[in-house]
Length: 215
Image 1 (cartoon, rainbow, N blue to C red):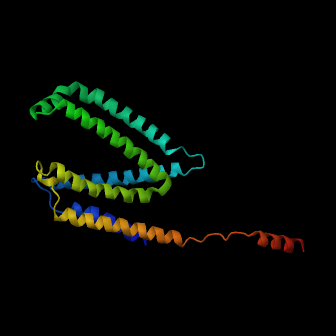
Image 2: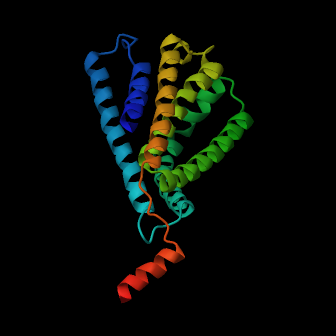
């Protein structure tokens, strides 16, 4: 059953977030954050379904075309935010923090370039998978990306921020997610084998059918 695989993946991701909030934060603020996250996840899931519906239409656009259009819209929205909020406070929110941390502008620009390229590859593969595999399978694959973030963030940022370290809880969550993805893939392949296929019509069968029709 594919639903068992989906349930395992969902539980694995939720398990990684279990525990008490740190820093003495207000419980109401934490609860509001959880509710907002659930609402945003609902909209995000709706985006997957809407994207699959659009890419399954009879006169559907190509995934590359959808990726280009979505990219232009997102860049336009971000550009408005940058012009009216970031640029007027450039020294305060960009230059000063970088100088205080001893940052290298060349390294920052290089990281920004590779981040842009990775987002381009991510967007293109996302829409290609959405059109060929569907919204559910695409969402399941996104869970693998989430557990990969656990390992990469631990390697890069564990020495600077303790909350980024790969601990036992995240290890268990990673195992559950991987098992869920493997089970979902197995269940989906088994379900595909059970789909009845129409028997191929032979030439002899067609001749006999025509003879019976004439008689």
